[in-house]
Picture 1 (cartoon, rainbow, N blue to C red):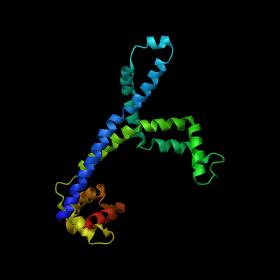
Picture 2: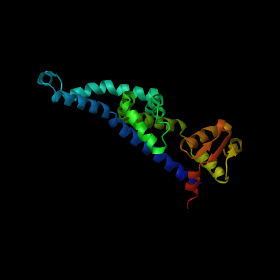
Picture 3: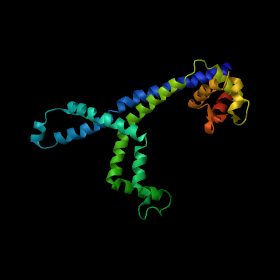
Picture 4: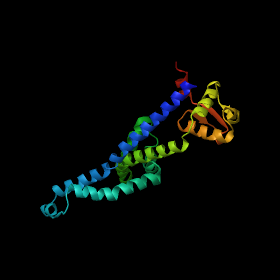
Length: 225
């Protein structure tokens, strides 16, 4: 039991470290888009006409600040609206593999030809840049969501979770959820325990949570001397 509790706490620490890294990396990376666009505009101004260069009222830093105020909210809104599937949605609408002559190509030749079609499509090509700018917001949103879910499924006492894992370790396959009620006071107290274990990827659950099983990787971890 103590060994199982040790691994439960260890996986919690790993998850907290992962979400913290996502947040610490995602927030500064959210400024990559505004910085890149500000740099492009500023270079265009610097190497543009003399009248434009001397008549421009702000420097790179001011341009960067303005673009941050405009772009960052839009990028986060886009990421939330598309649920992290922005590029996939664009590709689905572009259908790069369905172009005439490409669909019949085998293997990697088909993908290379599809990449050319993608770059030739202005909307799909620009989506590559937008997808790159969305990396920071995606990390931040995902990290924040994971941290919030971890707080929601957190258990005040890990002993019931250890008891469920101990019971599943004795089984070589999945079991009916009802058979695990004995490991807890009642069914109502079992569901939060299963939610915690499923969130931290200790167990797999069937449809309607009627059947549960110990994850194969978790089983190997716990059975390693």
